[in-house]
Length: 396
Image 1 (cartoon, rainbow, N blue to C red):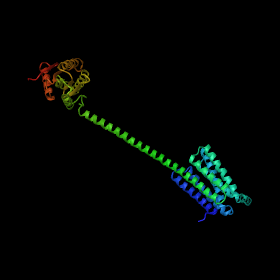
Image 2 (cartoon, rainbow, N blue to C red; image 1 turned 180 degrees about the vertical axis):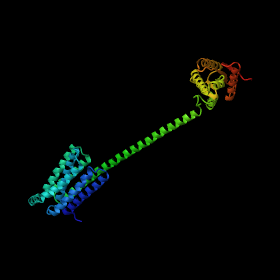
Image 3 (cartoon, rainbow, N blue to C red; image 1 turned 90 degrees about the horizontal axis):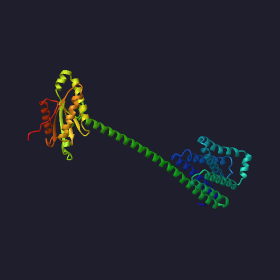
Image 4 (cartoon, helix red, strand yellow; image 1 turned 90 degrees about the vertical axis):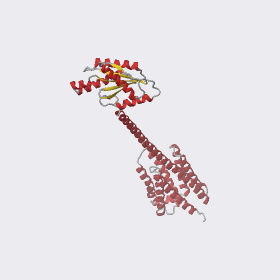
C-alpha cells in the first residue's frame, strides 16, 4: 500500500476521532464527566460538524485544514473551560458555548464572500493558527498548573504542526502522525492515571467506611459484652446477697469461708456468729415490721464496726456471721464486744445481741466445724444471760 497525502490525512482524521471517542468512554467510565469526558465529546462533535460543513459548504477545503480548525477550536474550548471552571460557572453553559463556536464558524463561512477568503488562505496559514493556539494553551497550562503529562501531550501536538509547517510532502505527514500518536498515547496515559486515581480514592473511601462499620460493630460488641458481663456479675452477686438486709446470704458465706480455707496465704481467720436476743418476742409484741427494722439496724451497725476486709452475712432468720480474715481469737473478741456495746446503746427499738466465736485452724479446718464451734459459743452466751460474747471450744 502506498502512503499518499490523502491517505495520511484520512488516517490522521480517523485517529483523532478514535482517540476522542475512546477518551470520552474511558473518562466517562472513570466518572470524570465534568472535565475530560465533556472536552473529548465536544472535540469529536466539533470534528464531525466541521467535516460535514467541509463536505456541504466548502468542498474544496482540504480535510487537513478542517482538522486544524477543529483542533484549534478544541484547544480554545479547553482554555476557556479552565477559566470557566475556576469561576464555578455551570458546565452546561460551557458546553453550549463550545457547540456554538463550531456553529458560528459554519454560519460565517456560509457567506460566499467569506468562503472565498477562506479558500484563499493556504494550509500553512491554518497550520500557523493551530500552532499559535497550541502554544497559547501550553502557556495557559503552565500558568494554571496543568498536569505535566498533559503539557507534554500539547508539546507533541505543537511538534506535529511544526512538522507540517517546515517539512514538505509525505514526510511531513509521517512525522506529524508520529508526533500526534505520541500526543494521543501521552494523553491516554494521563487520563488513565486520573481514572485509576479516582478508583483508588473510591476504594480507600470504601475501605475506610468498611473499617468504620467494623469498628462500630466491634465497639457495640464490646459494649454489649461489658453489659452482659456486668449483668452476669450483678446476677452472680444477687445469688449471694440477702435481699432483705443487703448482707451475704448463706451461699455467699460458704463461698467466702471455702476460699479462705483453700488460700495458702491465709494462716488464720476468725468468725463471729450472733443473733438478736428474744427476737421472737419482738416480732410477737411489736410486729414483723419492727422485727425487720431491727434486722436492718443490726446489719447497719455491724458493717460500721467491721473492717473493710471483713465480710458480713445472714446465715438464716436473725442469725448472722462475720468473717474476719487474718484475725485471731483476741481480735475477734475485741470486735465482738465493740459491736455488742454499739447495738446495746444505739438501736431503736432497743435490743441486744449474743455472740459466739471460733478461729481457724485451732477450732476447725472446715467451714462446718468452725460454724459448730461458733454456734456453741452463741448458745453458751444465751445460757449465761444473753447480751454477751462467749467462746466454747470443742472437746479434743
